[in-house]
Figure 1 (cartoon, helix red, strand yellow):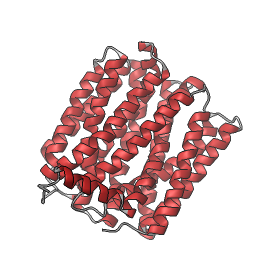
Figure 2 (tube, helix red, strand yellow; figure 1 turned 180 degrees about the vertical axis):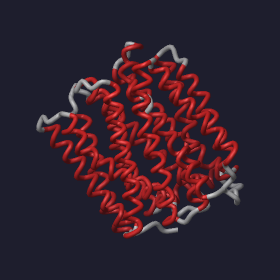
Figure 3 (cartoon, helix red, strand yellow; figure 1 turned 90 degrees about the horizontal axis):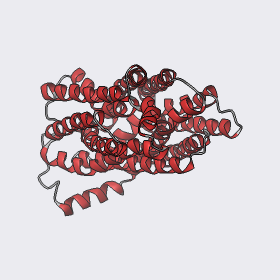
Length: 395
């Protein structure tokens, strides 16, 4: 595969996650109204998807180390597309939750393989730059997803928004079928043995480099998930934005993330990975703390909430390429397992955050701001105390 083909494929595979979430975020209030569901049930359509996404990776990772990336990718993308059809045709909230959970489980195979492919082909330092380019493509997909989701929901219904998610899955399946070539040339015949698997997971979990970079990724994603789970209710329900206006707001957020990935590459060209992550940690801390302060002071407006969050999401564009490639870097022979474990931990944090947000909902923007502030502090501490002191990725 050419380098361009690899970047395009990685962008599509990694981008399947924001497509699955951002396209239907503007539709959440419409789903809530159509089914007469409460807020916790509606948020469960997102939390269940992400919990299944994280948990399934613990299975997909060892399977890909044993049988290769291509068959797991094919299975994952095909199942994602079929589950997307089930979401479009769902006639109850319970059915929608089940189909979204299945879609999340399939998505786990896709994203896990994408991260493992980077380690198959590149060293940890080079992998951070490649991951940044792929996540720039992800940022572009995220930019167009939210406005399209809002437009489709306004013109037709939320079923149309989820239909486009299914269509993206079908396109990804075609690209993988025609263009992807196996990247794992030395399969591990012992990858599925329980004792070997348990020992591999234990070695990964106690590796300082994995811990350091995973904590950065978890903290940064926790703040992003908070925004994804709460923002439609805050900006549409509380502040009165139209769905298309909210879609444009998500576009601006995704565009800022895209700029963050570009900034990441610029910083990596001048600094090492650790100092790049440290700069991102400072931006995260500033953005999250500023948002919480505005919310506590009662400045709950679009500008008062989004201004600080732009700083946080800019840092997210730095943390994800460095964090994901750095965590997998020390494990060239178990990249699937390491990628799966990192993804699982991220989604556990997201699921716990979703449960807390549902319980803390009080009709204001304060729970969202408090949660983002918490994750910004966690990200900054991980960047400063773990990554910066630990040093760069070690093989």
